[in-house]
Image (spheres, rainbow, N blue to C red):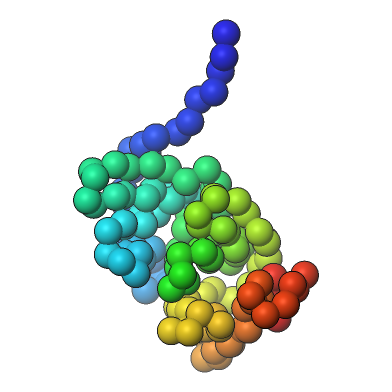
Amino acid sequence: MKFNYKLQRICGSSYGPSSTFLGGGANILFTPDGTTLLSPVGNRVQSIDLTHNVIRTLPFQTRSDIRRMALSGSRDLLVLVDVDNHVLVVNYRRGVILHRMRFSEHARALEFSPCGGFLGVSHGRHAQVWELPSSLVKREVAPLI
């Protein structure tokens, strides 16, 4: 017998609790081409293909409910921040976790730059801009600089 089960759908609310002290639930994302919707359901992410009506659950999960998400313009990197400030940097196309880290404060916003070379994170009264590694120019070991 072969046991190769994959989780397809999750029942639950898509946006998370909106009445928290952090100012709202989790955000939803559209891919740059507008055909796929990424929606957090608890500590997992559902990818909803709007053209073919296909739902799949991505094969990773965060430690607690997802608070913020950001997808790069090339659809390669997905950054997830949960309620406990744990961060996952994920290869979106393959569904593989590339890096785990933790923020010291609650992230209020995440956004990739239009060129895809930087990631902006705001928390509290501060904002940080991180340079992303580029595999086209040179091979880099550090996930975020």
